[in-house]
Structures are given as structure tokens and as C-alpha cells.
Length: 281
Image 1: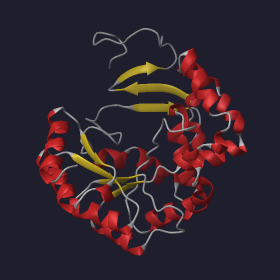
Image 2 (image 1 turned 120 degrees about the vertical axis):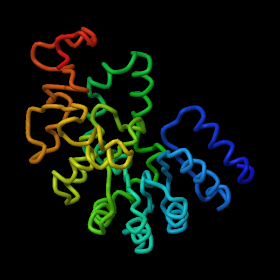
Image 3 (image 1 turned 60 degrees about the vertical axis):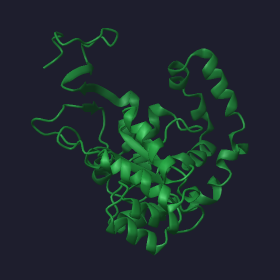
Image 4 (image 1 turned 90 degrees about the vertical axis):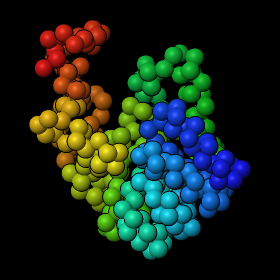
């Protein structure tokens, strides 16, 4: 950035291009004036604003900007978040997306390296891309991306519980696409971690459904099963209140989106759905 005018201009470029969210990643590299210029443009356009923040100074800047959420709630190798950060987040009603799986996937893979050969990954990608991705993970323990994971992972459970117990609203975020963090399983894996950290399963389900709808101003249409809302529903073979692995892709029996059933007994998944399709209720 080259001053607040440049920051505002770049924010307006994104807004004019039709973005739904303004996200600021490196708060520490911006001046206060640049940060506030971006915030002013985002608020004027009525857009959700997200940031990356870990230190107390960054959280304080986020609160001053009036952000809606902090993504990848950091804190590094510190055992707990500073009390000042928790106070600022709670008082300003900032939502936290900790994306715990991003680094915990290192521990998961170290314990069960066979997961890297899941056939779902191979079927989801073109052969040449699959080969490139799979080969890149042959020696995942040496990737710089996970250089701090071994130490930081020790503190994830306590830090997530700390946020939850201090009244901070949490949402399930995954950052899928980072190394070994595969799209087809990341959501239920993140939810499973939260349950293992001590959060009740129904609360975790709300963090994946109700809370995001509230966060992004879509609660009138999404987030809960109620008359008048869009029917985006899955039916699974299992009980996620007892085990979040019930949400694994292979356990999904029915998929209904916008009132249209796309998956289930008697549904041909290769046939596209049109407005006149009898599957549309």
C-alpha cells in the first residue's frame, strides 16, 4: 500500500468487481490510516470484513476497524491467548475461525499416513495433477509449511476451549487446499477436533451452520431448518452427536439443495436438474 488513498482505491476496485468479502491479511504491514481507509470502504459498501490476526496489537487493530471475523486465529506457540485479545474479541462481537485442522492435519497424517492414498483424492483430480499433489506429500514432515506445527499443535485444544469458554462465537473454517487438508473431508475433521477439544457436538454443528449464516448476514435464508428458508439439507447414515465421522462423504445418503434432491435412492447423479424436474419440490 502507498498511503490511505491508495488503500481506499484498491478496496473500491475489489468492491466494484463484485466481491462479497473484504479480507486484510497483513495488518502489521499497514499503517493505521491505511487500515481504516479499507475499513471505511468496506463498511460503506455493507460488506463483511475479515482479517488475519494473532498478536494483541493485531487484534486491537481488528477491533478498531470493526471487522466481522478473524480468520486462522493465531497465537503461535503461546499456550493460551492473551486476556486482552479475548476481551477485545468478545466486547466487539468478533467471530473467530481458528482453522485448527490446517496444522493438526500434520499430527493426523503422522499417525495415519495411509490417508494420503485415499481414492477420493485420486478420483477428484485429473491424473497429472493428482500425481503432482501426491508426490509433493511423500516427505510431508520436511515441508516448511509445517515447521511450527509440532509445537503449536500442543496448545490447540486449550486455546479453542479458551475462546469458547470466554463467550467468543466460533465458526467452522477449514482453509481446505492447504497441504494434506483435502476438501472432501476437512469440514467433518474440523468439527471432530472441536468435539475432541471439549465442545458439545450440537454446539459444533451450530458453528458449521447457524453461526456462519449469522456472520454473513444470510440467516433469513440459511443456517437452520425452518419454514421459508432454503432447504439445504443432508441426511447421513449415522449420528454426528455421537461421532462426527457420520458426516464423512461416504455416509451421506441424501443431498437436498434449495429444495432440490441431488443425491439419494432413485436419483441419477449424472442427470442435471432443471426447474421442470420432478425432483424439484
